[in-house]
Image: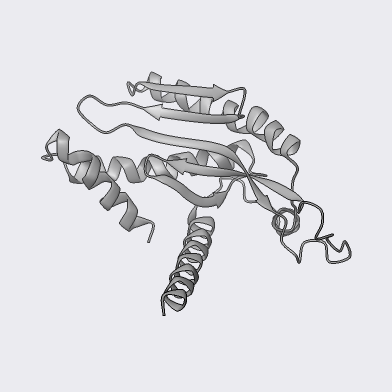
Length: 195
């Protein structure tokens, strides 16, 4: 009975993670310059190496965040961008007095190569399974379960602004929250918009 319950719990967790990933990936961006369908298809079936994703974070993600940071500061919204040279992750934080900060971060994460990726390359069970890497988005409330690797700068900026817009919507509709309630309410409000 316990083994059956554990199996059911695991299946439900995997299904929830899959659905969240699909929803976030489909709704994550409204690019100013949409990719062609061929480029989109190529990106869907690409399994990049760590070096490729590191280059992407360094040459696309970080400069995009820096552009947003500069514009926000000019508009009177204090913002800072951080880059971790060791783990190759980039993060933008926006601060407003007496409010919960806005955080958008892109981290490199590794995943086991799916069996269908290269069917002609049978995996040797005695060897470690090969891995591929993604540039996953994290907000203040955690992993958003979607990958931005392959985005152009304009697409990534659009994705940052989509999340920032939800954050502003929250601030606009909850002006009377006390500071110690703000963090919990932010998680509930923004979380429901992604469901």
